[in-house]
Length: 87
Image (tube, rainbow, N blue to C red; front, side, top):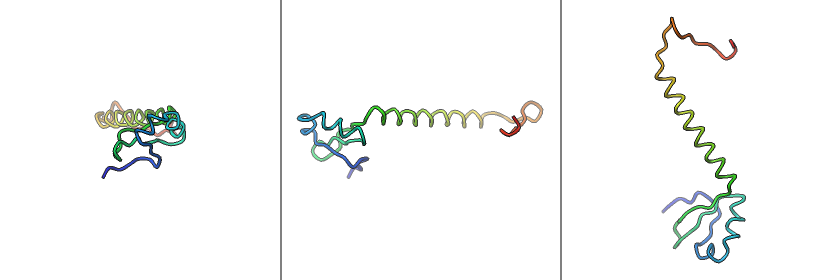
């Protein structure tokens, strides 16, 4: 059994007959499109998609930053650790 990541759903035949309704519902929450009672896809609002892409970008940036920090060899003569309060 697949997990549905939303509480709102619409059948694919209902989507064909009334697509505006699905997009109206997606303004507040993601809507899962069901085909034979199985998820075929999701409809999300542009704002929701933008938030999701921003979060993914933040994760990528954080991962790169952690990787770069771990690659740096801390040498006492060239690099010194400082606290934000020291600036």
